[in-house]
Amino acid sequence: MAPPPPAPPSVTLRTVLLLLRALTAAFLVITVVLISTNTVTLEVLRTSIKMRFNDVYAYRYMLSAAVIGLLYAVVQLFLTISQFATGITHPLSYQFNFYGDKIISYLLATGSAAGFGVSKDLKDTYLALIEFESTDPVDKFFSKGYASASLLLFAFVSLAVLSVFSSLALSKRPIQVS
Image (tube, rainbow, N blue to C red; front, side, top):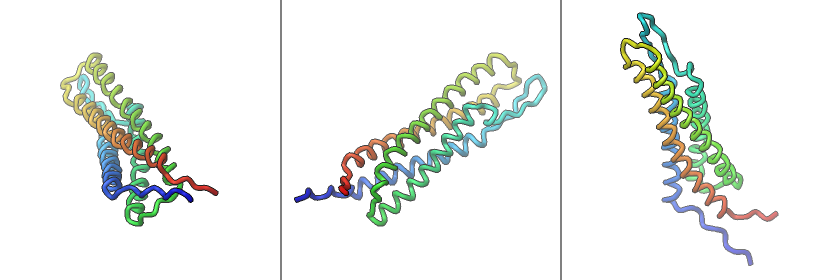
């Protein structure tokens, strides 16, 4: 006699997973908006220089990581809502959740680390090497970089928590015997 199949996750757990996926997507949407609108005009010796996020390679990487993470989060959000509504879980969704959560969470973590590192280093360098009429534009530009990196870090943390749940779900899934 075969053992009974494991019980499906409780409604509370599925609700928590859905809320974590929505929270991840929200953090990533705000990150994409913040970093993509990060531009400033610097006044250096009566010369205007327009600085954009895409002038900094690490900010481009951070935006790429956030966009890829957002696409993944939206797909996962739709899959989670459909599983929540129908109660049917596709057998491959366990692996998709497990590997996807791991890969994307590491991508978000590296994007956040790149954003923090370049914001610190470039802000110090700009302020030390260039005579600005006012440091407010530099502070504004790099503060948006810090804010974007922070939100990307929060998205990583919520996806890392989801990764733990997907690891547990994969280990408890019913084994298909052909």
